[in-house]
Length: 532
Picture 1 (cartoon, one colour):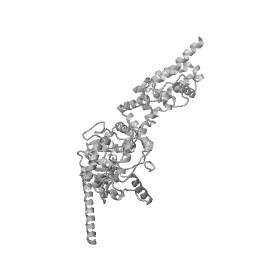
Picture 2 (tube, helix red, strand yellow; picture 1 turned 120 degrees about the vertical axis):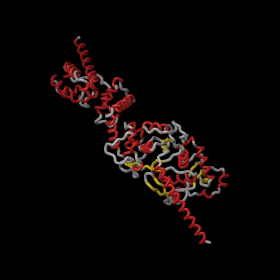
Picture 3 (cartoon, one colour; picture 1 turned 90 degrees about the vertical axis):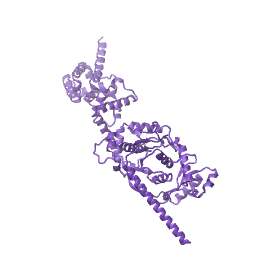
Picture 4 (tube, one colour; picture 1 turned 30 degrees about the horizontal axis):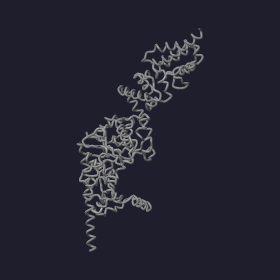
């Protein structure tokens, strides 16, 4: 009898191993074939509205967008808000706004609609409940009545024994009839299959995991009727016809669970790509709790969306070998993106590289007349939002473009132009008390204005002005250094700052003459009054 039992158990284990071997081969084969087929590609970016959008989320959105557009498919935005305790008011709208700012426009989503909505999970609760009960009916799930107190004791006991905390599947043995009639609060758990499961990861290749060995049966429907992530994402991916899932590598360990759920519901799973971890330059984990990785803060610091997208793809791969000054437009990213070249190893982000890319982006924009005007418009908006609004006569396109071109060599972001040291460009200084020697020689100031007036607009540059200022000082008998100090005060109100020729170039001919003549006229009226 014992021998027969052992033989039966041996045959059972062999059958189980064969089942999982066949299943793994099927997932590997279907994954490979589905990747080669470019038709009907549908991907999703599915963030939770639990705080500010960070670089990791933007990276996930970007690669989903690139994958969809590369294969002529659809890019879906889905808001996963089933954990209502963590939802932050306004966060969902900020996600939508950030995608729009970055140029990653979804084809379907909460504000766009589509054939497979709603696209907010809290509006789909009844669907998840229906599929959870279908799993109950087919024997793939069961009701669990374990209290929080018992679960906490299990966790503490595991920690005491230096084991990974896991549910012990106690309620698996309860009969469906007894649990149905109890009326007590409960959750619904999914029955994990035993053994290894191998699937083809589009980034990492074949991955084999034994989920049941690592954890207990997972909750798929909570006692309040809301689903957990595992059930909701599987149901939505199927009903929304998602063909490929590109997400962070932290979700790789959950993939067998999701494949099992697909199988239990009779569905074909999508193809999975798990993007590598983002790390700090020193190799420590990049955390969304770090304020400097929030997209909104980087935006406020003056980094352009194009810069952030290039920063992420240069770190994460998908584009082969890149030169030092490589910088892609979004259309270029789509055309050159190759999923086979995505990196499997963790990506280190260098803040210095981000600054270099933003500087490169500004230079590229200034080489293109259309983009230069767009940049001028962006600068105008920044100045309008400044603490002290800038007078409108300082905000013409010509003025803004001139300032941008003159500062291009040292400009890291447009925010640099809002620095207090640059305030003189945007606001005329109050009348100042000039250097006494220069005041007494009012004719020298009038002579300088005449010289400046004779310079054509296209020659009003540092080189021409440098020669002119030296000649003016020599002819007036005023020391050059003293003349420069006085002119700096007249033009900017500053005792220290950029060279006078550079100041004049930044201000332009019209503004330079306006400021100097204001002092000539003021001095003239003062002297008339004193004579009278």
